[in-house]
Length: 357
Image (cartoon, rainbow, N blue to C red):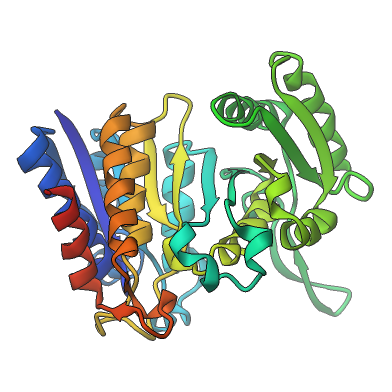
Protein backbone atom coordinates (compact mmCIF):
# COMPACT_ATOMS: atom_id res chain seq x y z
CA UNK A 1 0.00 0.00 0.00
CA UNK A 2 1.29 3.46 -0.96
CA UNK A 3 0.52 6.80 0.66
CA UNK A 4 0.43 9.81 -1.67
CA UNK A 5 0.32 13.46 -0.63
CA UNK A 6 -1.96 15.50 -2.89
CA UNK A 7 -1.03 19.20 -3.19
CA UNK A 8 -3.39 20.90 -5.67
CA UNK A 9 -1.99 24.36 -4.98
CA UNK A 10 -3.32 27.41 -6.81
CA UNK A 11 -5.07 28.43 -10.02
CA UNK A 12 -5.77 25.52 -12.34
CA UNK A 13 -3.94 23.22 -9.91
CA UNK A 14 -7.18 22.14 -8.27
CA UNK A 15 -8.83 21.33 -11.62
CA UNK A 16 -6.01 19.34 -13.16
CA UNK A 17 -5.15 17.43 -9.98
CA UNK A 18 -8.80 16.42 -9.69
CA UNK A 19 -8.48 14.63 -13.04
CA UNK A 20 -5.29 12.86 -11.94
CA UNK A 21 -7.07 11.74 -8.77
CA UNK A 22 -9.77 10.19 -10.98
CA UNK A 23 -7.03 8.13 -12.63
CA UNK A 24 -5.61 7.04 -9.26
CA UNK A 25 -9.11 6.11 -8.03
CA UNK A 26 -9.62 4.02 -11.17
CA UNK A 27 -6.31 2.21 -10.62
CA UNK A 28 -7.28 1.56 -7.01
CA UNK A 29 -10.67 0.14 -8.04
CA UNK A 30 -9.55 -1.97 -10.96
CA UNK A 31 -5.97 -2.93 -10.14
CA UNK A 32 -6.06 -3.27 -6.35
CA UNK A 33 -3.32 -0.67 -5.99
CA UNK A 34 -4.35 0.43 -2.51
CA UNK A 35 -3.01 3.96 -2.93
CA UNK A 36 -4.11 6.16 -0.02
CA UNK A 37 -4.45 9.87 -0.76
CA UNK A 38 -3.77 12.59 1.80
CA UNK A 39 -4.56 16.26 1.07
CA UNK A 40 -2.17 19.08 1.94
CA UNK A 41 -1.52 22.79 1.40
CA UNK A 42 1.19 24.62 -0.50
CA UNK A 43 1.57 27.94 -2.26
CA UNK A 44 -0.86 30.82 -2.19
CA UNK A 45 -3.75 28.86 -0.73
CA UNK A 46 -1.44 27.73 2.07
CA UNK A 47 -0.48 31.34 2.77
CA UNK A 48 -4.15 32.37 2.89
CA UNK A 49 -4.98 29.65 5.40
CA UNK A 50 -1.81 29.47 7.51
CA UNK A 51 0.26 32.59 6.83
CA UNK A 52 3.07 30.67 5.10
CA UNK A 53 3.41 29.13 1.62
CA UNK A 54 4.88 25.95 3.12
CA UNK A 55 3.27 24.92 6.42
CA UNK A 56 5.23 22.67 8.76
CA UNK A 57 2.31 20.23 8.62
CA UNK A 58 2.83 19.79 4.87
CA UNK A 59 6.49 18.86 5.37
CA UNK A 60 5.56 16.49 8.22
CA UNK A 61 2.95 14.68 6.11
CA UNK A 62 5.25 14.57 3.08
CA UNK A 63 7.91 12.72 5.07
CA UNK A 64 5.31 10.10 5.99
CA UNK A 65 4.27 9.51 2.36
CA UNK A 66 5.72 7.50 -0.52
CA UNK A 67 5.33 10.24 -3.12
CA UNK A 68 3.72 13.61 -3.81
CA UNK A 69 1.43 14.83 -6.60
CA UNK A 70 1.52 18.61 -7.04
CA UNK A 71 -0.63 20.87 -9.21
CA UNK A 72 0.78 24.40 -9.49
CA UNK A 73 1.49 27.43 -7.31
CA UNK A 74 1.29 31.18 -7.70
CA UNK A 75 -0.85 33.92 -9.11
CA UNK A 76 -1.13 37.73 -9.25
CA UNK A 77 -3.09 37.78 -6.00
CA UNK A 78 0.09 37.01 -4.05
CA UNK A 79 2.64 39.03 -6.05
CA UNK A 80 2.56 42.02 -3.64
CA UNK A 81 3.75 39.80 -0.77
CA UNK A 82 7.36 40.00 0.37
CA UNK A 83 9.49 37.42 -1.42
CA UNK A 84 9.74 34.99 1.50
CA UNK A 85 5.95 34.65 1.62
CA UNK A 86 5.21 34.25 -2.09
CA UNK A 87 3.76 30.93 -3.29
CA UNK A 88 6.88 30.04 -5.25
CA UNK A 89 8.91 29.99 -2.04
CA UNK A 90 6.75 27.09 -0.93
CA UNK A 91 7.71 25.13 -4.02
CA UNK A 92 11.41 25.90 -3.65
CA UNK A 93 11.16 25.14 0.05
CA UNK A 94 9.64 21.68 -0.27
CA UNK A 95 12.21 20.71 -2.89
CA UNK A 96 14.98 21.77 -0.54
CA UNK A 97 13.46 20.28 2.64
CA UNK A 98 13.00 16.88 0.99
CA UNK A 99 16.31 17.05 -0.96
CA UNK A 100 14.57 16.52 -4.28
CA UNK A 101 17.69 17.28 -6.25
CA UNK A 102 17.02 15.44 -9.52
CA UNK A 103 14.36 16.96 -11.75
CA UNK A 104 13.36 14.80 -14.73
CA UNK A 105 11.61 16.62 -17.54
CA UNK A 106 10.82 14.47 -20.57
CA UNK A 107 10.02 16.10 -23.90
CA UNK A 108 8.06 13.54 -25.88
CA UNK A 109 6.09 14.36 -29.01
CA UNK A 110 2.96 12.27 -29.36
CA UNK A 111 2.59 11.48 -33.08
CA UNK A 112 -1.02 12.66 -32.96
CA UNK A 113 0.22 16.15 -32.03
CA UNK A 114 3.02 16.56 -34.56
CA UNK A 115 1.15 19.41 -36.26
CA UNK A 116 0.86 21.24 -32.92
CA UNK A 117 4.60 21.85 -32.75
CA UNK A 118 5.91 25.20 -33.93
CA UNK A 119 8.66 23.34 -35.84
CA UNK A 120 8.44 21.33 -39.04
CA UNK A 121 7.14 17.80 -38.58
CA UNK A 122 10.31 16.20 -39.92
CA UNK A 123 12.38 17.99 -37.27
CA UNK A 124 10.29 16.94 -34.26
CA UNK A 125 8.61 13.71 -35.34
CA UNK A 126 9.66 10.93 -32.96
CA UNK A 127 11.13 13.34 -30.42
CA UNK A 128 11.93 11.69 -27.07
CA UNK A 129 14.50 13.42 -24.90
CA UNK A 130 15.00 13.75 -21.16
CA UNK A 131 16.30 16.87 -19.44
CA UNK A 132 17.80 16.17 -16.01
CA UNK A 133 17.92 19.43 -14.06
CA UNK A 134 19.74 19.92 -10.75
CA UNK A 135 17.00 21.29 -8.52
CA UNK A 136 18.18 22.33 -5.06
CA UNK A 137 21.45 24.17 -5.73
CA UNK A 138 22.84 26.79 -8.06
CA UNK A 139 21.82 30.41 -8.37
CA UNK A 140 18.30 29.85 -7.02
CA UNK A 141 19.68 28.90 -3.61
CA UNK A 142 23.21 30.31 -3.49
CA UNK A 143 24.36 32.86 -0.94
CA UNK A 144 24.89 35.76 -0.72
CA UNK A 145 21.72 37.02 -2.38
CA UNK A 146 19.46 40.04 -2.09
CA UNK A 147 19.12 43.73 -2.92
CA UNK A 148 21.06 46.35 -0.97
CA UNK A 149 22.28 49.91 -1.37
CA UNK A 150 25.86 50.23 -2.53
CA UNK A 151 27.66 53.42 -3.53
CA UNK A 152 24.39 55.31 -3.38
CA UNK A 153 22.35 53.03 -5.64
CA UNK A 154 20.47 49.76 -5.43
CA UNK A 155 22.58 46.68 -6.02
CA UNK A 156 21.23 43.19 -6.63
CA UNK A 157 23.18 39.98 -6.17
CA UNK A 158 22.58 36.25 -6.64
CA UNK A 159 25.28 33.62 -6.31
CA UNK A 160 25.69 30.60 -8.59
CA UNK A 161 27.27 28.02 -6.29
CA UNK A 162 27.80 24.27 -6.48
CA UNK A 163 29.75 21.81 -4.36
CA UNK A 164 31.33 18.99 -6.33
CA UNK A 165 29.19 16.50 -4.41
CA UNK A 166 26.04 18.26 -5.66
CA UNK A 167 27.28 18.08 -9.24
CA UNK A 168 28.32 14.44 -8.87
CA UNK A 169 24.95 13.25 -7.58
CA UNK A 170 22.99 14.86 -10.43
CA UNK A 171 25.57 13.43 -12.80
CA UNK A 172 25.00 9.92 -11.47
CA UNK A 173 21.26 10.42 -11.82
CA UNK A 174 21.61 11.45 -15.47
CA UNK A 175 23.97 8.60 -16.38
CA UNK A 176 21.72 6.02 -14.73
CA UNK A 177 18.72 7.30 -16.67
CA UNK A 178 20.75 7.24 -19.89
CA UNK A 179 21.58 3.57 -19.27
CA UNK A 180 17.84 2.87 -19.58
CA UNK A 181 17.53 4.94 -22.75
CA UNK A 182 19.96 5.70 -25.59
CA UNK A 183 23.15 5.71 -23.49
CA UNK A 184 24.09 9.29 -24.39
CA UNK A 185 24.48 12.21 -21.98
CA UNK A 186 25.02 15.81 -23.04
CA UNK A 187 26.14 18.03 -20.16
CA UNK A 188 25.17 21.67 -20.66
CA UNK A 189 27.17 24.48 -19.03
CA UNK A 190 28.85 27.85 -19.67
CA UNK A 191 32.37 26.77 -18.80
CA UNK A 192 33.95 29.30 -21.17
CA UNK A 193 32.75 32.13 -18.89
CA UNK A 194 31.77 30.81 -15.45
CA UNK A 195 34.13 29.17 -12.96
CA UNK A 196 31.28 27.23 -11.37
CA UNK A 197 30.69 25.68 -14.80
CA UNK A 198 34.36 24.78 -15.14
CA UNK A 199 33.93 22.72 -11.98
CA UNK A 200 30.66 21.31 -13.34
CA UNK A 201 32.40 20.06 -16.48
CA UNK A 202 35.34 18.57 -14.56
CA UNK A 203 33.06 16.65 -12.18
CA UNK A 204 30.90 15.35 -15.05
CA UNK A 205 34.02 13.95 -16.67
CA UNK A 206 34.94 12.24 -13.41
CA UNK A 207 31.46 10.75 -12.97
CA UNK A 208 31.42 9.49 -16.55
CA UNK A 209 34.25 7.09 -15.72
CA UNK A 210 31.79 5.04 -13.68
CA UNK A 211 29.60 4.55 -16.77
CA UNK A 212 31.78 3.30 -19.63
CA UNK A 213 28.66 2.19 -21.52
CA UNK A 214 27.37 5.79 -21.74
CA UNK A 215 28.92 8.45 -23.96
CA UNK A 216 29.38 11.97 -22.57
CA UNK A 217 29.47 15.20 -24.57
CA UNK A 218 29.51 18.85 -23.48
CA UNK A 219 27.70 21.86 -24.90
CA UNK A 220 27.53 25.53 -23.96
CA UNK A 221 24.04 26.57 -22.92
CA UNK A 222 23.57 29.17 -25.67
CA UNK A 223 24.43 26.59 -28.32
CA UNK A 224 22.20 24.03 -26.58
CA UNK A 225 19.24 26.39 -26.85
CA UNK A 226 19.91 26.81 -30.55
CA UNK A 227 20.39 23.07 -31.11
CA UNK A 228 17.10 22.27 -29.36
CA UNK A 229 15.35 24.25 -32.07
CA UNK A 230 17.62 23.24 -34.97
CA UNK A 231 17.94 19.50 -34.35
CA UNK A 232 16.30 18.36 -31.06
CA UNK A 233 16.48 14.65 -31.88
CA UNK A 234 20.27 14.71 -31.56
CA UNK A 235 19.80 14.62 -27.78
CA UNK A 236 19.03 11.64 -25.55
CA UNK A 237 19.65 12.87 -21.98
CA UNK A 238 20.65 16.46 -21.21
CA UNK A 239 21.98 17.23 -17.72
CA UNK A 240 22.40 20.77 -16.50
CA UNK A 241 22.20 23.22 -13.62
CA UNK A 242 19.11 24.62 -11.94
CA UNK A 243 18.91 27.86 -13.93
CA UNK A 244 19.87 26.44 -17.33
CA UNK A 245 17.53 23.48 -16.83
CA UNK A 246 14.64 25.78 -16.00
CA UNK A 247 15.05 27.65 -19.27
CA UNK A 248 15.92 24.75 -21.58
CA UNK A 249 13.10 22.49 -20.37
CA UNK A 250 10.49 25.14 -21.18
CA UNK A 251 12.08 25.59 -24.59
CA UNK A 252 11.92 21.82 -25.15
CA UNK A 253 8.31 21.79 -23.98
CA UNK A 254 7.18 23.89 -26.91
CA UNK A 255 8.78 21.46 -29.36
CA UNK A 256 6.02 19.07 -28.36
CA UNK A 257 3.20 21.47 -29.19
CA UNK A 258 2.02 22.42 -25.72
CA UNK A 259 3.46 22.90 -22.27
CA UNK A 260 0.20 21.29 -21.11
CA UNK A 261 1.41 17.86 -22.25
CA UNK A 262 4.59 17.50 -20.22
CA UNK A 263 4.97 15.93 -16.77
CA UNK A 264 7.97 16.06 -14.48
CA UNK A 265 9.50 14.22 -11.53
CA UNK A 266 11.70 15.56 -8.74
CA UNK A 267 13.54 12.75 -6.96
CA UNK A 268 15.72 12.27 -3.91
CA UNK A 269 18.54 9.74 -3.65
CA UNK A 270 16.06 6.96 -2.81
CA UNK A 271 13.63 7.78 -5.65
CA UNK A 272 11.07 9.34 -3.35
CA UNK A 273 9.52 11.89 -5.66
CA UNK A 274 7.28 14.86 -6.18
CA UNK A 275 5.43 14.77 -9.49
CA UNK A 276 3.93 17.75 -11.26
CA UNK A 277 3.15 19.22 -14.68
CA UNK A 278 5.77 21.72 -15.79
CA UNK A 279 3.25 24.44 -16.61
CA UNK A 280 2.21 27.08 -14.09
CA UNK A 281 -1.02 27.92 -12.30
CA UNK A 282 -2.48 29.80 -15.30
CA UNK A 283 -4.80 32.04 -13.27
CA UNK A 284 -6.23 33.55 -16.47
CA UNK A 285 -8.00 30.28 -17.30
CA UNK A 286 -8.63 29.03 -13.77
CA UNK A 287 -12.19 27.86 -13.20
CA UNK A 288 -13.09 27.83 -16.89
CA UNK A 289 -12.81 24.05 -17.45
CA UNK A 290 -10.39 24.50 -20.35
CA UNK A 291 -7.02 23.62 -18.78
CA UNK A 292 -5.20 20.59 -20.18
CA UNK A 293 -4.95 17.89 -17.46
CA UNK A 294 -2.85 15.44 -19.48
CA UNK A 295 0.51 16.59 -18.11
CA UNK A 296 -0.77 15.99 -14.58
CA UNK A 297 -2.19 12.59 -15.52
CA UNK A 298 1.14 11.71 -17.13
CA UNK A 299 2.84 12.82 -13.92
CA UNK A 300 0.93 10.00 -12.20
CA UNK A 301 2.45 7.67 -14.80
CA UNK A 302 5.94 8.91 -13.91
CA UNK A 303 5.15 8.45 -10.20
CA UNK A 304 4.17 4.84 -10.80
CA UNK A 305 7.35 4.23 -12.80
CA UNK A 306 9.99 5.97 -10.71
CA UNK A 307 8.72 5.88 -7.11
CA UNK A 308 6.17 3.07 -6.88
CA UNK A 309 7.81 0.48 -9.18
CA UNK A 310 4.65 -0.05 -11.21
CA UNK A 311 5.98 0.26 -14.75
CA UNK A 312 3.16 -1.74 -16.33
CA UNK A 313 0.52 0.55 -14.88
CA UNK A 314 2.54 3.56 -16.01
CA UNK A 315 2.48 2.14 -19.53
CA UNK A 316 -1.27 1.64 -19.19
CA UNK A 317 -1.81 5.32 -18.41
CA UNK A 318 0.39 6.37 -21.33
CA UNK A 319 -1.57 4.06 -23.62
CA UNK A 320 -4.90 5.46 -22.40
CA UNK A 321 -3.76 9.02 -23.13
CA UNK A 322 -2.58 7.98 -26.58
CA UNK A 323 -5.91 6.30 -27.36
CA UNK A 324 -7.84 9.42 -26.36
CA UNK A 325 -5.66 11.46 -28.72
CA UNK A 326 -6.12 8.84 -31.45
CA UNK A 327 -9.87 9.43 -31.24
CA UNK A 328 -9.38 13.11 -31.94
CA UNK A 329 -10.13 14.53 -28.50
CA UNK A 330 -8.21 17.66 -27.59
CA UNK A 331 -8.29 20.41 -25.02
CA UNK A 332 -8.23 23.91 -26.45
CA UNK A 333 -4.46 24.36 -26.22
CA UNK A 334 -3.70 21.45 -28.56
CA UNK A 335 -6.77 21.61 -30.83
CA UNK A 336 -6.86 22.24 -34.57
CA UNK A 337 -9.68 22.33 -37.09
CA UNK A 338 -11.57 19.06 -37.08
CA UNK A 339 -10.55 18.02 -33.57
CA UNK A 340 -13.10 17.27 -30.87
CA UNK A 341 -12.52 20.00 -28.30
CA UNK A 342 -13.32 18.97 -24.72
CA UNK A 343 -12.91 20.54 -21.31
CA UNK A 344 -10.72 19.63 -18.38
CA UNK A 345 -13.26 17.36 -16.69
CA UNK A 346 -14.28 15.54 -19.85
CA UNK A 347 -10.66 14.89 -20.80
CA UNK A 348 -10.10 13.28 -17.41
CA UNK A 349 -13.20 11.15 -17.85
CA UNK A 350 -12.07 10.05 -21.32
CA UNK A 351 -8.69 8.87 -20.02
CA UNK A 352 -10.38 6.95 -17.19
CA UNK A 353 -12.76 5.34 -19.68
CA UNK A 354 -9.81 4.10 -21.76
CA UNK A 355 -8.11 2.79 -18.63
CA UNK A 356 -11.19 0.76 -17.78
CA UNK A 357 -11.83 -0.78 -21.22
